[in-house]
Length: 151
Image (cartoon, rainbow, N blue to C red; front, side, top):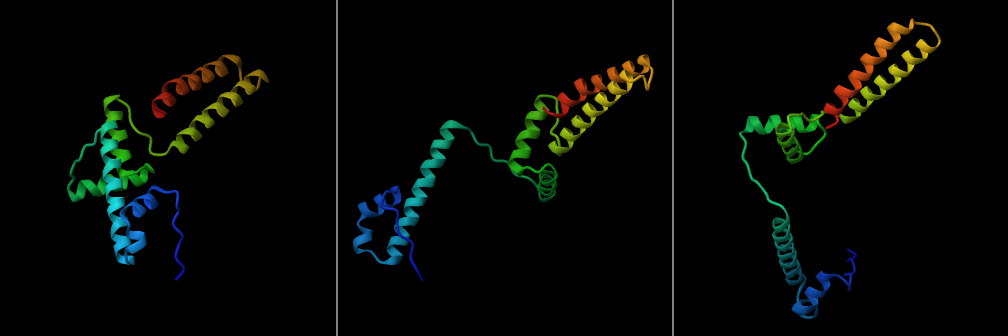
């Protein structure tokens, strides 16, 4: 089996070199020192992350977890992201959109309908008064529904 070369400029290499395990250690000892390095690295990373942001741990029953998992798949989000977005959507009295692509498709269809009716009105295929009221209705739909869906 071909071994990978260690990057001599990495922090891991510097750590291994400073412990002296590279010159005198066995493969098992080197692996142990590497594991110790990564354990310490991750501990420091978590410590720094906790300084920046706060973390909350919650527990769910099996049924609740199953429901969260299925909803996260439906929304195409991770479970943690779904929980966070749902929480803030509740605070902001809005909701999270299951499929943003579908909402954008709805927006596009409304815009296309608006343009089509506007063309029909301009070409006198429908009378001006009816066309104007339909255009106003579509415009109202766009202004009321889409901002709520895209929050």
